[in-house]
Image (cartoon, rainbow, N blue to C red; front, side):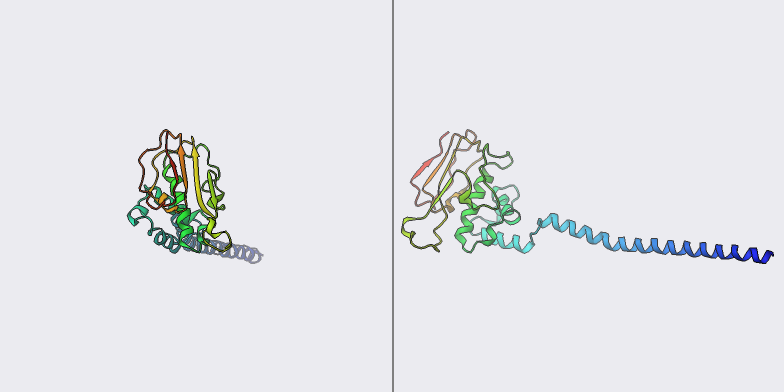
Length: 220
């Protein structure tokens, strides 16, 4: 009869109402999940952009403190300087500096990185880079460089005098800007030849630390 026909219709209406409530509950749950997850994602993205991939604030602080022995903090923290660029490269990109066990090793690599940054900063690259700033290679494996063992340490395989930069020869390679004072950290350098670079300033920094320097040529 009529009662039997109304009962299925009533059950169908109840089912549809329950389905509507369930759908709204699911939507509410998704909204709550997004409201919690989205801020966390934004924090992670900002942290990655601030410190660089795989780099912590403590690592930047450690590197800054180490390099402040060679360069004033006011210069290291100035984003417009080659020294600041070198600091950030050593912290965020380089794969070797963090494994150094002596100050001399870090000082040498830092000096080489600053040399590149100071003569390219805001002006592109050298004509030939020859592996300069290759993050996985020791600076003695970069082009235009030779490294030799000092003669009085030939019999000591563990001596820190190994792998010291002895000569730098860069000819007609479109260097610009000026040579940085950090070159004075290359205390084993015997020959420095940077010639044929028309836009490189002839202003020479204080190279008092280069007590072994025998040959210097910075001619155009």
